[in-house]
Image (cartoon, rainbow, N blue to C red; front, top):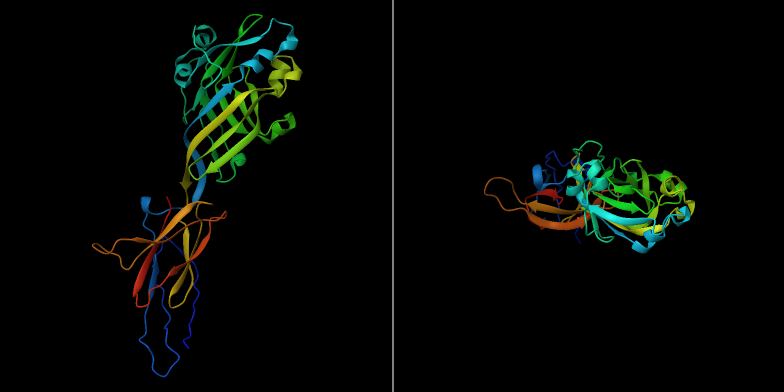
Length: 337
């Protein structure tokens, strides 16, 4: 009966190339089989071929869609005693239209065809240029993957809606920023809210019953729009309207994860026909492919996938790969999409 000698190794950073001395595998009989010297290498090819340890995720594009409930708006501010509906949608400006409009044009410019449904507020970039008295905000939102409420910065959304007030004048809702703050919990919200930055700047809507879906390439946040405590109490002076649902909100954004450090490949151990390949420092819950080639150099064999998988919540993995008897050496690398 044969016996197997197993050797475990310390981890190596992927960015370093290291030759690993191999054990000898001999049959436990007087007549020994040939000795197989097996050399294993881990390497990192920089640039797009290999992943780096994930840092903060950042948004690269996105947009929000608001479907206002006309009947709910018609019932707002009824306690003021003004003719109902007190608030009536008068104009909607998308991101480009709002960016090109002066504050006076937002207040007064005729714009027929306004719809309560399907209002799109595109995400602003990292910088914005405002006309005088305009208050669009840049997107500075970044978060640890898997922890969106732990974000820094805000999501700037371009666009505005104008409501005519039955007693005279108009109200502007727009130049929104989307963010999370635990302070909103005390106001009855979920923490996620839309801040209106057109004066008087304040929380405009709390996002109620939020549904948050995060993937490796972005996230979607949806929920009901509830009138904020600030708007109901200080703008309308109708406290009963606090958290009254006046529409539906959904933001969808695409993101990239800023790489910081190379991940680490480890050899957990081997036998005559199996290698245990492990790694750490990957993108939590992200996909990966381990590739191998028998040799490096111009004209050498192509890299081929030997195993695919997914990092765990801590960015680790451990899998077994086949080790063909008689293979002289193998080079390994890890590829992250």
